[in-house]
Length: 215
Image (cartoon, rainbow, N blue to C red; front, side, top):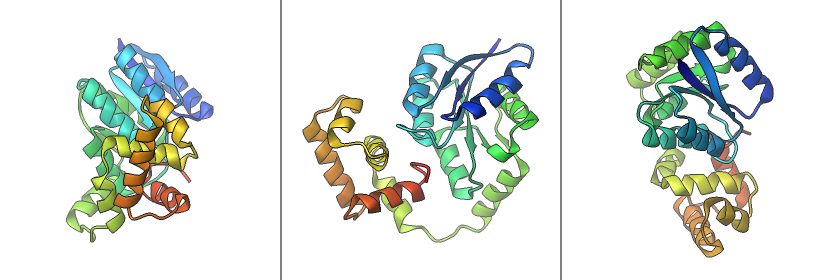
């Protein structure tokens, strides 16, 4: 039996995925999640074969959730779903440990094919995404300063960026991460300094540009 975990914060998307995937003989939806943190927790609890994961998840975005899932469960494969046909985003998903990358505009029978590939520990890209990735390798563009800044952030700092960009206070960040308010404030100061940001509006724009949160 192939166990699949669906993680998307939109009920209609989850319903559609559930309908398509659970019709496949031998496949079962072992759980669903509506935040990135819940996806990581349920993956650790349920140990699915495949996680179908939206990249724009609240609390913990899909890239960070993928890193944590793959670190905890090396045999669990992750299929990233996104609305963005971005070569850079596809490469970041691969770097995070995802083995598949699928545009939401390509859902339907394609997601069944993608899960079949991942269940066999094979990669899967639609032809459009594969072309984007190949084009990026053949014609690399200049490094973006914002991207370089993002790479200097630690995984914990990226989590905090998402919380702050979603409007969470230092106290709420501390509570969510199990750290002191002082530690949360220190992380916030370090993040603003590292990224050379001077206001929360700049931090929000950075988080959107880096696909840490959805606009």
